[in-house]
Amino acid sequence: MTMNSETEKTINRILVSLDFDSSSSSFVESMVKLASQLDAELCGLFIEDSELQQVANLPFSREITFPLAHTRELNSDQIARHLKQHAEAMREMMKNLSQLSNVACSFKTAKGPRIESVLSESYDFQVVVLLPEKYSSLTAKRPARLEEIINPTVLLYDGSEQAQKSAYIVKALADKGELHQLKILTLDYDSEVLAKQRFTFENVNIDYQRINAYEISSIIALLETQKTGLLILPAEDKLIEQSEQIRKILDALKCPLLLVR
Image: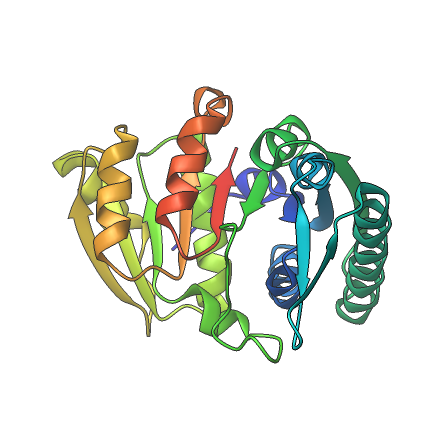
């Protein structure tokens, strides 16, 4: 599979969303590795969930502690401090892992609803990585290898410029021997023929399926019935602007979502 150098150069910044869910930290190392393979800068965006702090201020809110199951009042100031501590720990982790892999890395925080906060910060990035709210890696007690996470990968290929960038990501994963199973969603016979011309990998099992890919419900229905390790969607601005549609996709997923701009 060939890819022109101009397409390669357009993928130079990756934004990965992180939140208080400790399972997201196990995904950081694999994202650093992906950034290294793409020769791209990685930016971690930690979301301070404003809704959590608002709930803590309600008079009936309590926090249950284990193993004795004692309850105590939630305190929004304590939650805010805890979130900042967690953000600093994630920042330090990303910094250390990025240095080991020689990856340019940056980190910032944002407050507000998660999806909207990520999308509002995403305009200077070519790839946006979102995790389901209850994401759990295959190896929760140790950093999961990228190979464990991404198979099978599902890619929507519609021939657009964003799809070309998506194809470059797939190529990078295949060239490094991380990708073994790939399902390509196409719109019609012509796009399937074009995809078959572009995707010729050794040691990668490729399946093709036609789908009404511009209907988000069609993609969701497919993902709910089939195992998916990674979903890559070429994302035009009109999709980026539809946070509710992206939220529906994430709710149906148990895997990372890559939006490629």
